[in-house]
Length: 494
Image 1 (cartoon, rainbow, N blue to C red):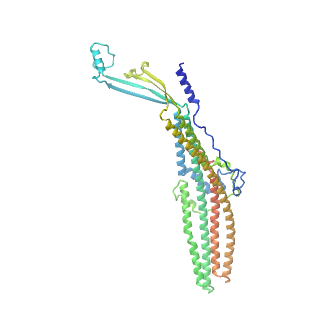
Image 2 (tube, rainbow, N blue to C red):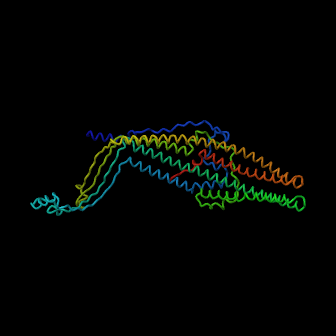
Image 3 (tube, helix red, strand yellow):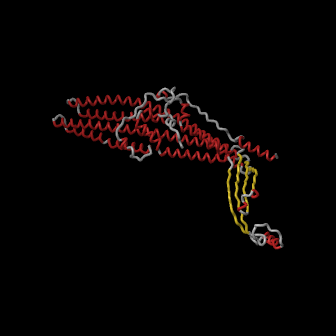
């Protein structure tokens, strides 16, 4: 074997299993605390966080149904799934560079040569002198000026990936596919949290409507009482007017709360991939605010790095940026290629298939950048800078994820304390209304005492309903901060 053949065999072997230029990726190491600073708010951290199907902990079948419909039909999820398919197709395009390209071609051409050329005149002279003329060529001033040409075959080219530029590009594409898959999971986590929060808000608003209606009824009864006392001469008209004003003021809150509840229903309709009013009949009937579990295990901070989809996506983006450094570095080195072709060619169609009509060619090639090296090195610097940005972005994402969990823990815990205090306030205010009404009926207290007691009761009941709603909403926010909801749902992008 010649020295050139041995060289090209070595090049091919190197391209198939040789080195890859550029840095090899290593997962970034970030420092995380051993425990949450607000850990007492969310339950024992020694227990792993059970957040894969967190909505089940709220114990509401309607919410379960809404979640299932949102996962099935939400438009944002469909967009995210389409992006996964796009990324996978782009990866296949990149990986095609690892293999030869083969093209087939076929052609027919009929041509007529000019009789004014020197060759034609010589040929004509040869013909006139009785020289030999190839048979079947046609008439070209005695030699022939028209001919047919039939041709068909294959040609191939292969740029050998000696220094791993294509393999680094595939590595980057793989990381980008994974990053897009994590983006879909992040969309799913946000979607489930939004469904849960809107549903809890709807039930909280419906409870507020019930509180307003109950207070209107109670205050209307007080109006009737004051009118009876006025007719009996036991009080003045001022008490009646004040009682009527209180009823009107309380009733004025109904349109506001009802409008908010309708908006919540509309948002849930859109989140489940339907028109805004599709769920009106199903959700208009009041339901209880979903309760919260006694203990919410949140796991350890280190678990968050494996669970949060946005953290996982940021880590994959670092991997992709690292691989692109290798893609850019490979441009500094020579590029080796093999090209070749094989086919059949004849001036007669009936002889095109003959063995003598075959032709072939093969040859290696090499190219080496000479004057573009400054541009290539600048591109390497660009990719290095982008990798540094991706790494800083990953570290920032981790810090924000940890902060979101800490915030969610403290908000959830403190709102429970507030809810308990408001519950005690409601009990006290109900007793105050009973006492004030009894004293007023007996003529031992003025009507202002009754009005003040009623206002305090309505305010505390409203605040309690808001707090109960906030506790459940804050729990959903905690589950979202923990990155729960995507583990049990598969098949993304298929």
